[in-house]
Length: 308
Ligand SMILES: [Zn+2]
Image (cartoon, rainbow, N blue to C red; front, side):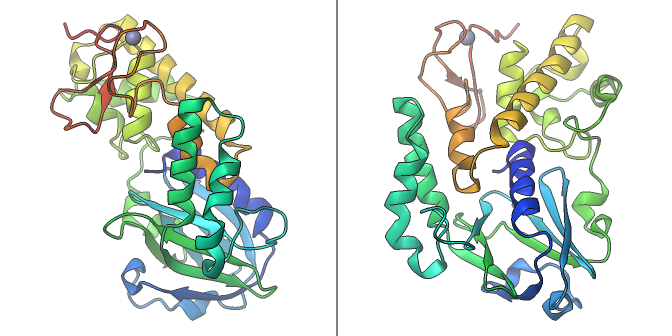
């Protein structure tokens, strides 16, 4: 699932690649992706892209007319098929299958052996994900909206204002962009008899954090994921706040220069505990374990993050 650092990097890519281009059409390969009834894809035709905005894990592609809002859900992503000569990974739908191996290999050149394997595997998965919709531009370039999941989780909205999308309207403060996150985090935690792992992922409370970065934040803060927020002392709240900032800040900085086809793989490769069941904790050498009750979807280090 793309979280705010990956969506932010994608936004940066789109700002340099599609802002200023004129939209020729939005073709829906899967009609179910478009969530706004009564709005026509033709409303976007002939409009120039004027900007890209990120709202938590959502993106808005702004035009002179309506905005196209994209929610990536569990496995949604984008693939750029413009300027095919600059990068082996920028392929069209028709040639994607034949160039997967090239794209995968390119992703793994400067990573560690384990990370390289992960990166190659995931980059291949990303570049071969089925196309759900195609945003085409007057100059012949195309932005492919993809979803690699077993069910469709990518969503599209054509709106006058992104806040018309219910999930965006109820977003909480974004720890990556807000200045006063300490107070906001205190507000998130205050009086909540809810487990930290779940609380960090409540988009209404704190925007942009999902399953993977919440594992990493709790590991950095040395907190057991199933601890209730109300049970934290002041020092632990401060540690959690610092971890939110450092983990997300590090991810934003790291992901910003990564090609969009490699973002998911790089995210996975940078994880200390998430997705690393049975591997060694990089901080203490202990063995990373599944969070109790998570059915293998969440991980922590029992040594660094003891249950008390
Ligand atoms: Zn550890």
